[in-house]
Length: 373
Ligand code: SIN
Ligand code: CO
Image (cartoon, rainbow, N blue to C red):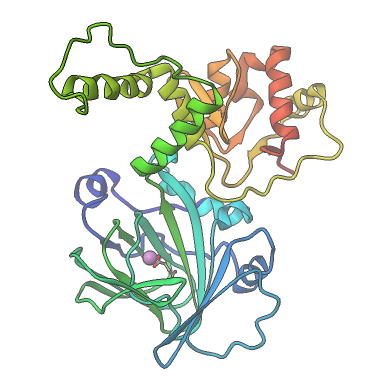
């Protein structure tokens, strides 16, 4: 099913994106949940899936991490199960992220889904990232406060909360309602009845992550071997001092490396096309032969991208899950990056080139794309 989002994106970007929280009443009309509470609870029992159970009782908060073996001990109130990156494990849920592709793919992170019983929630908190919280089944009261400096505390070692705050949005959300919250605005959701919420989360790399990632790239490729030189050295008054022009020289050595567009762009493609969450890769057994891939596509079968797989374009190169797609067929690589479902026609002439077909076959045999049954 294709979800239709009722949103004026130009207005949204101009007024709200990274600026103000906003309630998008009935953003999805006639909303139908892509997943049931039972399916979600089942996912939280899987080893590979990242999940939490947050509960509170008379002001005492508790957090347990999945995988869970049973839910029999849980009462009827005050708990919530939260499952991270459900788009990686459940294709119908992944479709809920598609209407948000007006925001570039590289900024998108994952779909977190929570199921809460009455009184359930994670308490008042801040997030570092933008989020659209979609109300599925059930009603839940969501409050959002102004972005002001706030003290954070940990009522449980795995739970970061803020003090109670005054609300600028206070809404009993109903199915299909959406709240957009930029980073740093405090918010909390308390369920009024059994409720499902979908959080479309974004990512924004910090300088620290990028410097560290770029350093790994430099080391793995043995770049930056050039050494500092000072053929213009003259006598100085203080031997202990590093002079400003020397500091400047060393800083520009570092900046030159980052400033090299070839290295920077290639590193960025590799870095940002890696998912932050585990992928559900299931290589086909037995593997396909390139000829079979050709025939299936020609016969009208389509290739579906694995949920959560990041396929991004930087300049005239495309990257998938941390690696460059090595091909001269930019049009075909571009089709792989733009579309979630790929047809023979989208790949065009590249399909007639054995080297592209071998590459496509390898991607399928990696489990990155699979044939839609
Ligand atoms: C939730 O669904 O309970 C948590 C979503 C959030 O506040 O980020
Ligand atoms: Co939050």
